[in-house]
Image 1 (spheres, rainbow, N blue to C red):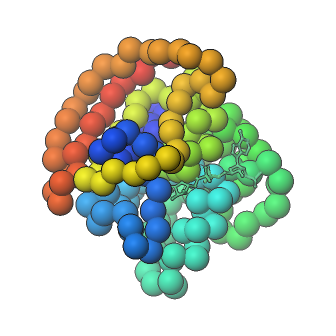
Image 2: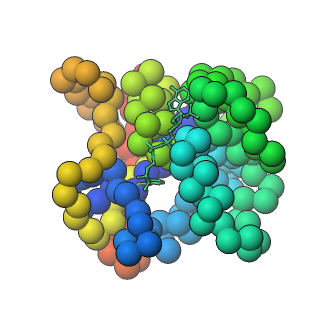
Amino acid sequence: MKTILWATLTANGNYAQSSPENPPKKEALDDFATQAKTAGNFIVGRRTFERMLEDGGGGASPFADIDIVVVSRNGAEIPGVTVAGSPQEALNYLQQKGHQTALIGAGADIHNSFLGHGLVDEVIFNVAPVMEGKGLNLVIDKDNYQYKHVQLLDCKPLGSGVVQLRYALER
Ligand SMILES: NC(=O)c1ccc[n+]([C@@H]2O[C@H](COP(=O)([O-])OP(=O)(O)OC[C@H]3O[C@@H](n4cnc5c(N)ncnc54)[C@H](OP(=O)(O)O)[C@@H]3O)[C@@H](O)[C@H]2O)c1
């Protein structure tokens, strides 16, 4: 099963954070919904998932028929989704359900867990036209300097100044 990590970055390379004053661009959110529909699933950290529920507002969900896996160490059940205790457990669940691709949706902690364990085949970075101060970073090793060459697969504008970059990683 192929794993794709999807993230929005800022123009100065941070892992983008959002707030009511600085919401995500519609083009990026629409792209995430498209990627999730194509994969039929997404994996998300417990903190981001809770925020998605707060922001959901009770309208029709674009994720109605999608397998959502929330990664959490605390093991508490969450209605309507599957809870996995680790990144590998999330992948095992989707693999056993027959998915060909797993989409890793957010947030920083989860992305860094997947990257740190070498569990990512491809990354999709949507670079948004915003810069931040001190913020979050996506890294392949939280403790040591490391580098990994990646192969550019695609680069395209999504509109409203958002540029999508797609890279392949070798495992
Ligand atoms: N740029 C983007 O594309 C994007 C998209 C969405 C959100 N965001 C930003 O992301 C931030 C939220 O991300 P976050 O890093 O705070 O939280 P997160 O990654 O969404 O969730 C963190 C939680 O995931 C669980 N977890 C993490 N690693 C794990 C592991 N190895 N095994 C088991 N469980 C694990 C833990 O849950 P438990 O505590 O339950 O154990 C942890 O507290 C916000 O600032 C938001 O604005 C950015």
